[in-house]
Length: 303
Image (cartoon, rainbow, N blue to C red):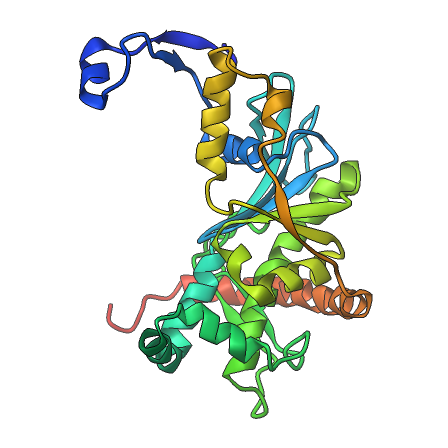
């Protein structure tokens, strides 16, 4: 077993020629995508954590020892820095849930955005601006693709719960954003059994949405920081490993690469409300487990 920063060889001459690289280029072992992302997100000590809001989404930290959950809802990677681990929980449909909402509910917003030269998500943010925390007591279970952490249930499916005649599209969009973060809060709570995080760094495409980052802050009850670069954490981590392996820098020097440019403070009143709604969210999933199994046992009508 060797570390992530071990030099394992030099580049093959033919490959160097094809890529236009020096024939003395070193090959460093590197790490998996999740571990590289943690390093590239600037999380280099156990008191730090980050949240990635992409198609799939996860919360991760760096620790001197694995964090084992008694229900096996989270897991551990080896961290690129020797002697450290990456306790993590990854859900299937984070940003993918909001992308589904765009495709299923927001044809008008997509057309409007196209005419204005904007992203449809910008127009959707305008709708969510009109809503209040809790979306009128509407809950969304974000299990459109089954679920990995923290549920580990391939039969789980998405659901709106509490839908009434007073709800509108904007409420449904907000409920999707909140449902994803409620699910990730379960992971965060597990990781915090070894110590609380004062803040959490948010990266990924979801960090671009003005409403989603405030929802993260309010549900987590933490300051959310937004780094200068949102979507390059994995490649940044891999580059850092290569540079350290080649002797061009140290991990301590690399930790200064990530610079936060925005800080979002949570609203205590919103957080207290979300704490109560979170309990309902968790119970809603558990109450539907038997229903999910029943649906999975049926063939679709076309079969």
